[in-house]
Length: 153
Image (cartoon, rainbow, N blue to C red):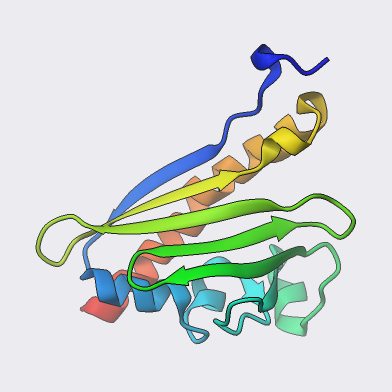
């Protein structure tokens, strides 16, 4: 039974970056920078482009897709909205939406929302969702912040 009390919440994280929005956008979407902060293989920066998030650095360096999450670029609305799907083969897609907003001179607010968990039984997906929430907040967004701020310096 999957009632409202069993619903798996969207992952929502925010971070402030000390860089102008256009610098943050370029870091967010450029083929040269995305693999650096996202830990992925094959990112092209094109709508419909498939890429693979590989958390194992040795496998990533070797181009090994074993255990990698599949992703597809869905939306790139410069300078503020980037959306990609996140899925394993033969499973429904979830989506990661990253929005950028100016937050003062040379400062950008970044909001990440990973959604689509309602397609899965809560008792099966909750642990996966919770692990991803920790990864987005403690690793991916801080890596993104470092990458963007280093380009703005």
